[in-house]
Amino acid sequence: MSRGNAVIVHESAEVLAEAAAVRLINRLADAQAQRGEASVVLTGGRIAARVYADVLASRIRGVVDWSKVDFWWGDERFLPAGDPDRNETQARAAFLDVLPVDPARVHPMPASDVVDTPEAAAAAYAAELEAAADGEGVPPFDLLLLGIGEDGHVASLFPDHPALAASEAPVTGVREAPKPPPERVSLTMPAINGATAAWVLASGAGKAEAVDEALAGPKLPAGRVQAQGHTRWLIDADAASRLHHLEF
Image (cartoon, rainbow, N blue to C red):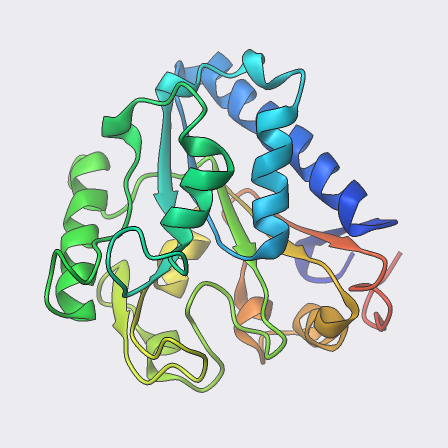
């Protein structure tokens, strides 16, 4: 496989979500077997919500001690707490509010009714990450989940947007995003690539062109994702329908 990306194609969105849920559970269980705890960076979007619902429904979810998992977010819409468009709200509804998590280990990005600007939210989140990493930038996330947009963006790092080049801090405020809402908060690309493992989830024919182009090279933000340990693309057959850049 070119550029170190493992691409796993599933026959449907349903199978993708179910398989990704099992992979996620096993990934966290393995981390806990080694260190007694685990960390995951959550993403938003329809396929992610289905994965989270399948985690909750899984018969093997009990192999993870959910009270010893740290939950982070890769990006967030700068909206009030509880807004249905926030990734945090989606994840809580899908599984976090039901699993026996430790509330102190759930780390949402600050909402717009808590801080005044995306930049203030980014600074606060960077400080929280640094504290969790004992002053070393960001924790070595066991797993970082990402969706991919039809334009090839990941997190809230859009093509040709200044936030894509941000590197001085692990978190950046995003203004004038090309998709609503225009104000967001996002991990930077260096922080994303600092994860031990990153999985890019893609479902639907609308993502097919972006998936193909991202796998071809770093032109799109999604094509720049290269985690420290491994990077996997977990996609369904529709999202794989235009692949031309795979080498077997």
